[in-house]
Amino acid sequence: MKKLKSKNYLNHPKNQTNLFGYNKYFNLFSNLFEKKKLPHSILITSPKGSGKATFVYHLINFFLSQNEENSYNKLDHKIDNNNSTYKLISNNLHPNFFLLDINEGDDTIKIEQVRNLLKFLNKTTYSNDIKFIIIDNIECLNVNSYNAILKSIEEPNINTYFFLIHHEGNKISDTIKSRCSQFRLSFNSEEKNKIFEDLCNHYEKKFYALNSKEDFYYNTPGNILKYFFLLEELDIKHTQSLPATISNFIDNYRAKKDHEHLNMINILIEKLYNNICIKKDKNLDKLFHERDYILKKIDDLKKYNLDEKIVFSLINEAILNYAK
Image 1 (tube, rainbow, N blue to C red):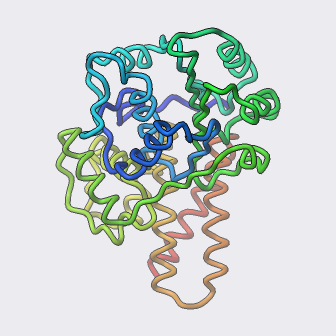
Image 2 (image 1 turned 90 degrees about the vertical axis):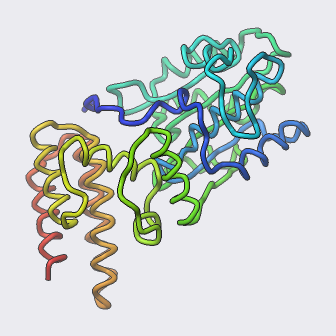
C-alpha cells in the first residue's frame, strides 16, 4: 500500500536554517573533520523527531561552505539564507551532495534511486572531489537497494562521506551496523525542553508550559511540536484527558485517512500505557505485551491498510483499562 500524503507542519530538515541543542555533537563532528579523523560511513541513531537530519544538514553546510561568502555561522549554529551551499542543497542542485530518501507515496527506497546514487559516486566534482551523502530513513532500504549500496558504504572513496540516519526502534541490518561508525544521539529532559522552547520561538508559537519529566521522558521535541500543531489544526484542547485526545485523533483519521494522525495515536498509546503501568504494580509484562501488540497493529495499518475496525477496537479496550 502506498502512503497517503500528509501535511508538513515543520520545515524539511534541509530548509531548517537554525539548529537547536546540538552544540556538543556539532563540535565533536566538526573537530573530527578538521583533524581528518571523521569516519567515512556514519550511522546516526536517535528517536524520530530528535532533529538528527537537521543536524547532519548543518554539518554538511559547515563542511562545504567554509570558503564561501555567507559561510556557516558556527557560533550560533545558523545558516545564512544567502549561503550558496544552502541554496544549492535546498534545490537539489549541489554537485557535491546527494540525498537518498523515501519518495513521497512510497514505503521503501527503490533500487532506481540507489542506481542514481552510484552514478553520483562515479562523477567528478569540485572542492577536491569531496562528496557527502545522506541516506535518510535507512531502515526503509528494500532488499535490492540494500545489496546494491552495501559495498559503497563498506568501502567509500577517500573523499566521500556517508551519513546514515536511523530512527531508533526500527530494525536495520546488522551488516549495515557493522560497516559504519555508530553514534547514538541523546538528550535529557531539560535539554529536550530547551530545544522545544527554541523551536516554539522559531515558529512563533506559544504553546502551554510543559512538564519536562512527563512530556519529554518518552518523546522528542519535534514530535511534541508536531502534536501541538495538530491539536491546533483540529481544534482539540490540550487540557482534555488523554483517552479523549486519542478518540479525537481516531475520529479524524477515519475522516481524513491522514497517516500523521496515526503517528500521533501511536505516540499517545505509548503514553497511555506508561501511565497505566505507573498506576498498576501487577501484570506489567502483560501490559507491555498489549502495548507492543497495539503499536504493531497501528504500524501494520499504516503499511498494509489492515482492518482499522480491529485496530481501533483494541485501542478502545486499552482506554477502558486506563479508566479502571
